[in-house]
Image 1 (cartoon, rainbow, N blue to C red):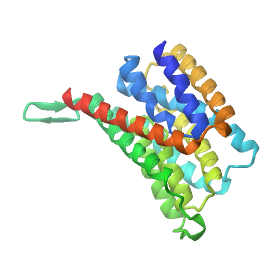
Image 2 (image 1 turned 30 degrees about the vertical axis):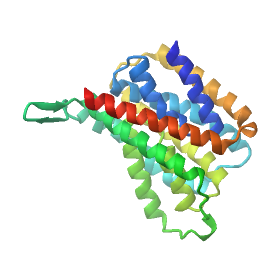
Image 3 (image 1 turned 90 degrees about the vertical axis):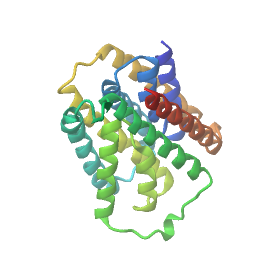
Image 4 (image 1 turned 45 degrees about the vertical axis):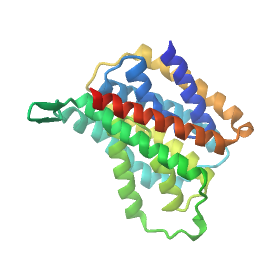
Length: 261
């Protein structure tokens, strides 16, 4: 029940900020609900996908989605996420490393990678609070670089089960020169579609608890809609800074816990 209530709060953060809250979904599942990390990352993709699409609806209705960029970035990212979950994650050895009697289990390796992603995400959120990139003067490097960034982000998202918004939004703003609100709306659509397609790679191979997934999705989507309703009444900059520090603390916690293990 605590896990479901935390999923509701994660949804509220998604609705308020247009992204970011999904980074906490895997730690909640692993450390609060006791779910094995590989399964937790699969569950996270499903829940994040549904909640992101729910959050994208208001942006779509207000024409705040940049479709011309979405197709290029989204196609590359979702293809890599699907292949990563379907082929790469099951093929990873367990343990990942075995040196002189010391071994790194697959589950711990994925959680260490997730901790690194959380630290990078926190840095991105805290840095962007006081930054306002001038997209008008940005030099557009061509579609090949956007495709390359999308491929790398898709690989990372597929491995850890996160949405990747902390990579997508800066890429859209700085590389594709997309206005910030449109970048958020476009990011939510990309995250939603690629997360659900990445989840299909797991659904083909692992046994999932669909009742738990349905409840998690219900709480998270409800939280997303609540967050959106209050988004115009909350200081987004202060909230983003506070959330960045929370993600940083969680990332350090996951890192230390797995290293002690």
